[in-house]
Image (cartoon, rainbow, N blue to C red; front, side, top):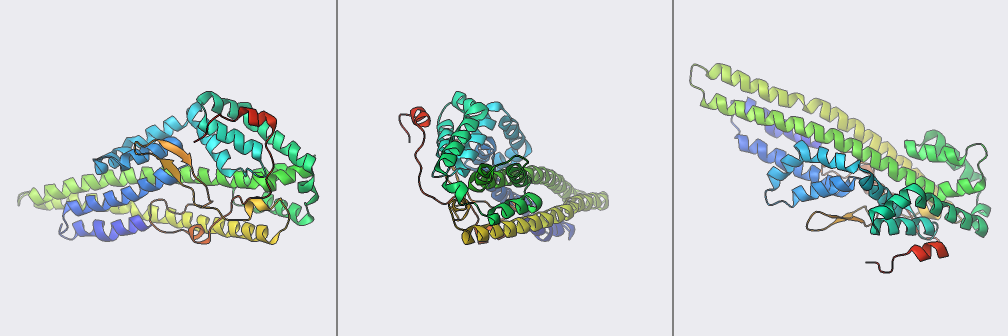
Length: 370
C-alpha cells in the first residue's frame, strides 16, 4: 500500500532513530494521505450521504480537523444515514439512471431520472413498483420490435453462460444465471445483454467500493490514534529528566513500533485488493473485446467506453447526482495511483438507435427539467 509504505519510510523510522524527526512531520504526512483518501470518497463512494459528508470536510476552513473528525465519527454517521429508506431509494435511482441506456431502455432511464429529480415519494414509488413496471414496458417494446431477439446468436448465449459460471462479480453472475434459468426466453438473454450486465457490474463495483471504504477508514482511524499516542510519548521522552529518560524513550519506541505494526496487514490487504482489481480489469477488457467484435443491437450498450463517474457536489456539499459512470474496479482508494482499469478504460453504454418512450412515461415527465 502506497500510504503505508510512505508512512513506514518517512514517519515510523525517524522517531525511533533518537527522535530526530519533529512530530509535526508525522502529522503533516498523515493529514495529506487522509485528504487524498477523503477526496476519493467524495467522488467515488456509492452512497450519496458519504460523498456529501466527505466533501463537506474537504471544503471546511479548518480542513485538517474536519477530515480527522470525519474519519473518526463522521464517516460512520454518514453510513448510518445511507441506510435510511430515503437515502437508499435515492442511491438506487441514481445507479439505475447511470447504468440504463436511454435508446435501449427509455422507460427505465426516464423513470429513474424522474425519481432522482423528484421527491422522496417519487423515489419510494420508483423503488417499490415504478422500476419493475418500467422494465416491463421496455421489455414488451423490445419484444414487439423483434429486432433484438432476431439478432441473438449462439455466441451470445455462450457468452452469458460463461459469465454465469466465471465472472468475478457476484451480482453479474446472478443476473446471468437468471437470464438462463429454466423457462427463460430470448427476452431474458436480450435484457441481460442490453441492461443486466451493466447494472450488475455497477452494483458489484459499488459494493466493493463500500467495503474498501469501510476497511480503509477503520485502518486510518486506528493508525491516526496510534500516531497521536506515539507523538505524545515521544514528546514525553524529550521532556523527561535524566532519571526517567531511559524508560520514556523505551515507551516512545514501543508506541512507534505499534504504529509500524499496522503497516504490514495494510500492505498485504492492498496487495490482495490490487490483484483482485487487475483480475476484474482483465475480465472487463475481455467483455469489451467481445462486445466490439460482436454485431447487432444487443451488444451496443456495453461496447463503447464512456467518461469517468463524477458526482456533482455544490459548494455547500450537497450532492447533485452522477454525471456519467465508467466501471473502475478500485484497487487502492486514496493512494493517488492509477489502477489497471483506469489505464484500460471500461465498458458502459453506447448509443444504439433511439426508441420513443411510452405515453404513460411521457405523462409522468416533469414539466421542467434543469
